[in-house]
Image (tube, rainbow, N blue to C red; front, side):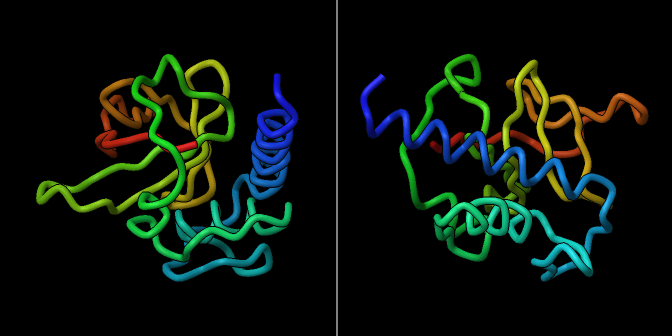
Length: 136
């Protein structure tokens, strides 16, 4: 691993570790702090900000940065997964975890299953978000 990729791996790992600390916090539209709660992009922004890396505020803005990861099987823990609506607009983001999971803010900060189709909530037995792209 090159020094640059080692640093990036460490940043993603620390962002995931930080996001884990917020499990169960409520979803709040526009929320971006650990006291009141998070929306999806507030969670990813805070997780990276606490590790010295600035992301744009909205999911659609965050999707414009970084390097594309072509396949979910090529994604690494801490990469960002983006999801779109019926009109193709990016409306949701989360941090990819190991073993086909994702941490994201949807109702609350939670962990769900992630596959090539999107986010699957096992308790509800349905997909809640459609995967559009992955960024590193």
